[in-house]
Length: 353
Image (cartoon, rainbow, N blue to C red; front, side, top):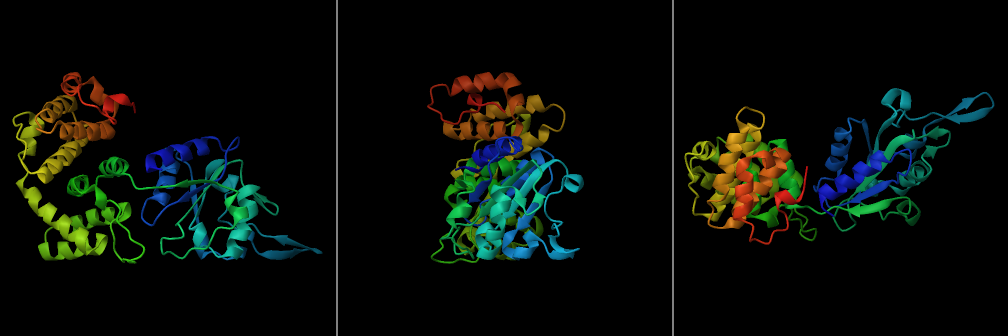
């Protein structure tokens, strides 16, 4: 399932906490963004997120430590568990790395997940319970999830999706050259072969690291190559370095944004580069004045590509970045009319934001 759909499911599960909420288990390979999606839902609701790494826990870390009270034994409540007075009435309890936790720890979590309690402790009614873990074939430290525990969750497997990652990357402010490279080489968004057991490999997480490498080492050709390879592996790092070097041949982006130029580069890699660079500049214009005029210039430029699908990708990514204001631009209707004969499955006008 694509990450954006999983985010919608978690959003509704959070909204249903206290009523029809069911604990959710997220499966996926390393670096696919499981933890990020949960954090994204918490941020969207301005809700507290308690991230419990079960792989680092002992059973008593969840169950608490026994102590004597008069002639009976009581159990202390761990401070890490949600408390309505300290954390608030609503939030997310995230049990991360649950498949890497030893069986003694997961056994202690059974009652917490299904009955929302541990002994006398009760999870506040407004708190949602989510969990995540790697799959058994991902060469991580994993235990087979016991059937009684598995039956306490609904299960969703996350697969990398380029459009979702591009929308996230633009919103996050990642280097547009990294985004353009993955538009050019979409097969490298996630390239993990457990049989080869690579140390560095391309993943949604490691491409963010590549962006950081460009920020830190962009002024040194030798260091940049080695830094990129350290993030995404030798082959992908070398390809990205060559792609970045080629981006120096981009046309006048200021002229395109101002409507003075409609030059389209010949190379397909440069076309991807100009598309992502323009989307970034247009999204930044949303925070400044005169944005509508710049959007109009971008929509006119989208019609200049010999391959109209490239123009469609430009407008689609622009819509994901700025949303509904794009529809108010007069040039949008003209652009839509210019591609009306194409059979499209992801046209911006087909969905709202």
